[in-house]
Image 1: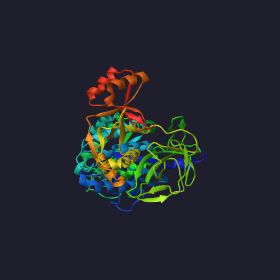
Image 2: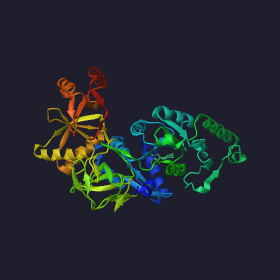
Image 3: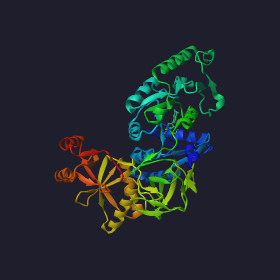
Image 4: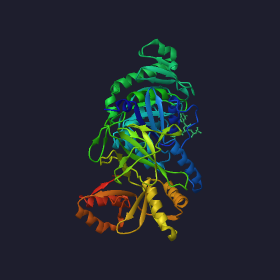
Amino acid sequence: MKYTNEINKRKSFAIIAHPDAGKTTLTEKFLLFGGAIQTAGAVKSNKIKKHTTSDFMEIERQRGISVATSVMTFEYRDILVNLLDTPGHKDFAEDTYRTLTAVDSVVLVIDCVKGVEEQTKKLMEVCRMRDTPVIIFVNKLDRDGKNPFDLLDELEELLNIRVRPLSWPINGGKDFKGVYNLYDKSFVSFAANRKATDDDIVPMADLGSPQIDELFNAQDAAQLRNDVELIEGVYDEFDKQPYLEGKLAPVFFGSAVNNFGVKDLLDTFVEIAPTPRDRESSTRTVQVGEDKFSGFVFKIHANLDPRHRDRIAFLRVCSGKFERNKFYHHVRLDKDVRFANPYSFLAREKNIVDDAFPGDVVGLFDTGNFKIGDTLTEGENFYFTGIPSFSPELFKELVNKDPMKTKQLEKGISQLTDEGVAQLFTQHNGNRKIIGCVGDLQFEVIQYRLLQEYGASCQFNTLPFYKACWITGPKQKLEEFIRFKGANVVQDKDGHLVYLAQSEWYLNTERANNPDIEFHFTSEIH
Ligand code: G4P
């Protein structure tokens, strides 16, 4: 294998969290350790805090920031870490889900006061679909949170994964003393806001040692000994294999804002997290070590300048070596394309790259050739699978307010949905356009961008649907279903049949009445 060294050097991952758990803060601390930024505050939160129509400038600002910080690359202990950012706002969750298809592992941040939250569950479901390895960081230990044992139970129960603590907090809130590292058997005492360096680490292999009684009062020392004994009794020794298979999540405790427990987490991450792996395609498993290049587009970002319609497509390299100015095969369009100015992302700067290897992400200038899920190869015809569309939860009919601008509207909505801003459905045997989104904010973004970038004005009428399911089955059964349920059957952009259910009751009824038809909640994009 030609590129083994390059592949083994790379770890690509994402930090995921329910908003406010501390994703931005942890990202910043990682970048500080990686030397990619020098000062705290350099990474801006990409959250949209308000939700008003006058907040469009905020949306624009957010789009600008998220291009700059979409991928952050830094080196730590000889490992090249690619950290892929995910939007903070839940209305952009689908963008996050898709980014998860381009990483090899994730770090999940949990707020110790709130525990598992709504978005935490959804994000984990997506990770479980691909067996993505997960490391959990329980954050905000400087606050009075839930009991750590209860938290571990909650994680196992609600996230449906086995957990194994690798560090353990000594108290919490204002009595927080520090964390004991169960992995390399050492202790780091807590001091707010300092950069925990190797000097702060006290080796403590023997918990019977009188050193512990010197460091803590009798109660805390006894508690630590009891807790560790209990953990060692209840949990198996940490085993890397089930972690790599996505079946076991190691858990760390700390406080991101105080830079506490972050180094333990990062050290373990670079040690155990997977390097780029083989990937499934429509025809075969593509081995990461193959000489020939392949990759896929997982995200498309519109240019901020509305006068230029060009966009940036984010391509994850899956095998071989990507080279600037070399022709590659665009499988869906069946044409060869090359890129004169591909970007890499080093912290907040964009740099032109000459080559990239598996695990890397390159930004490609695009004038409308790409849509999400597109595959590039060195000639072979296959596409990468496992990049699904998710069932939207809000549906509105798109109404054209200016008949003179019909063409612009059609083009605009087609390009915006290629970018993955929302999903477009057309009513079976009709022209009605239905837009499906995960959050209300996306409709506002679409309306705004159609006007600003395409000069088309539209209006949205709410439709009473609650879920979209892709349907497959024998032709005759599907035709029968359409005959009876025509008003609820639409086609997605690729011509796949989709059933829009008004309520859970309707969905269950149709499933029961049509046992030959399969109802899917995600669709492969192809
Ligand atoms: P997010 O990206 O996951 O949405 O979360 P973010 O990092 O923005 O953190 C959310 C809030 O939690 C921030 O406060 C941040 O300072 C705080 N935070 C992060 N880590 C810790 C921690 O370890 N302990 C405590 N006590 N707080 C933490 P904010 O008030 O929303 O913003 P800011 O004004 O402090 O920046």
